[in-house]
Length: 286
Image (cartoon, rainbow, N blue to C red; front, side, top):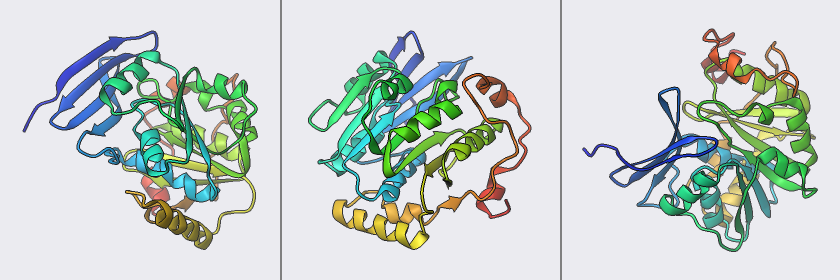
């Protein structure tokens, strides 16, 4: 078995970035406090492969919106989720926003992505990007991390209200959130106070939250929409299989809502005792 080989290293304004290669697998990682955090995994044998399970579940949000002609992604990283959507749905206009220009340079060099029609990347802070634009999207994906945590300004009430204002009627937002500390509780209750409904997907060590307004998406409708999209585009990871794992949140956690004035992301993440065990939610115990 081969060992990971460091093939690139960058120190940017925002991150300590390391790219490793182990056989056909290339991994983008960020270093923080002597630990490495995986950001993107690329299987060079298959451009449609999404080795990180949570990236597959991010695409489940397509079934919620139904008719999707454009997608906005905040947090590009190695770009594999965005590229998967682009290659699977060539007429879909995919726009990604990446804060760190060094990350984007490495993505182009090592992760099999490139700018082309219907696939664009803007180097900018994600929140600033949507503040400056009045466009509305049927789907917004949020997968921005700095080392182990989501930047606080992408978790607050004000941010989610801004995202909500940039969704088309019937649209939905998906966000990847680290689930193992009270940070998960705070993110869930905050997005749940802004949107009418929140569904969760257990993505194997990560949780994908899908939030939307309006009537609750009935499971039969969601399954039908997913099947139609699967048949039309032939997703490598069928949407129908993923939406069958949906868990709707009926009761929000009893914890503080995050606002721009109160978003102790690192403090919450540092708390080891969690009020509830996430597994109990997916077993239907809360």
